[in-house]
Image (cartoon, rainbow, N blue to C red; front, side, top):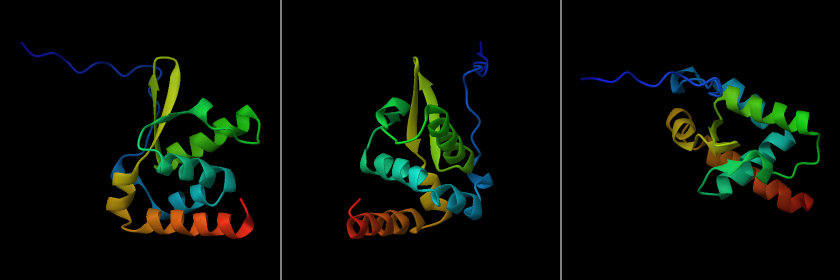
Length: 118
């Protein structure tokens, strides 16, 4: 007897498939300082982080917008775990499509933060 795959939950969030991720969309997503900050924090952790982990100096609705842009561009994956929305960097997908891009951008962002004292 075979079992059908579970039906998608109404809480499932849309993500682009790996082959749908486009360079210009990723670069646009990472061009915003708050979104780059989110990605830097995710890259520094080996585990998923909840949205509430991030202490951004913007409103909750703006924070939600930044996470949506990152998810829809294919930079992050968001999943619900209980009541928490968890975020993880799609490093394997990004490295597979654009080798070296993420590490180069993260290194440049770290050097800029050090230079500017942030």
